[in-house]
Image (cartoon, rainbow, N blue to C red):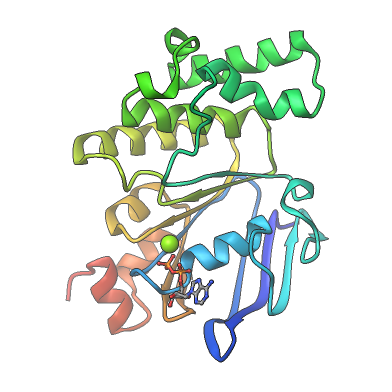
Length: 238
Ligand code: ADP
Ligand code: MG
């Protein structure tokens, strides 16, 4: 069974069609990258998977269940954004465990989950700090920690590294790859960065103007681009 099925999904804002019958299926443990230039509809699609945008047409299924009309909290997902959106008055620990507190998870279980996630992300020494006392990369780790402790079926990332400087971006890319390998989670990751897409993805969907131009494993897309647009965008040799 597919963990995520995007089935002929459409999105229109009034007359403006921003997604046109997009269909993508991925299995458990896949790392799907939605790759394309600014404005091609990547975030819109991710937000529809998350339940933050309504669906104009088609169906989205997570673990076989149609989620079109489910609110974000009922979808078994966790999302990491480009802006870190941490609670500024809370410590790192409080930020990470906030969602578990709301779901009334017992103290001992919360402590265990925070420890596992913070060890994995190497932020254990930062647990008592406030977000303002952290670097950009550390904040992004905290945001990931907050997602990990929820143990969702699906992780959604929207350009999580685009606010970081080049060196840190490469480090965090490695970190995300390691996390994916360690946790075996299913990820949908939005980026306009070809190298990021090619190094992270097990499946890549190259998008243009609300249409998936090609879906495949990154090596195949690079070696055998479906058209000139894909070849140019992923930098295939001519
Ligand atoms: P990407 O994430 O690939 O940069 P987006 O999904 O943010 O692209 O946007 C896709 C298109 O939809 C863009 O043309 C954008 O202007 C348009 N769009 C996004 N949100 C809205 C909205 N709330 N109302 C109208 N148009 C929107
Ligand atoms: Mg976007």
